[in-house]
Image (cartoon, rainbow, N blue to C red):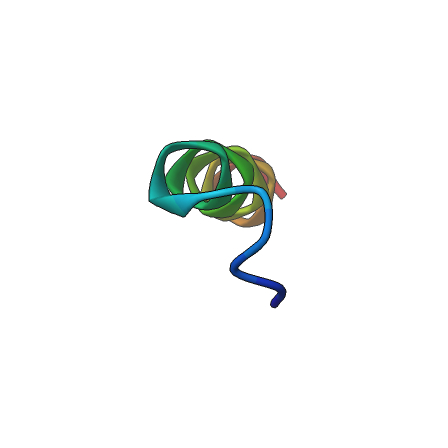
Length: 24
């Protein structure tokens, strides 16, 4: 993961990915 977007956007992306994994 690139740190260019920043920790805030990175966490948002990770959270969304984890949510998808939990829902499947």
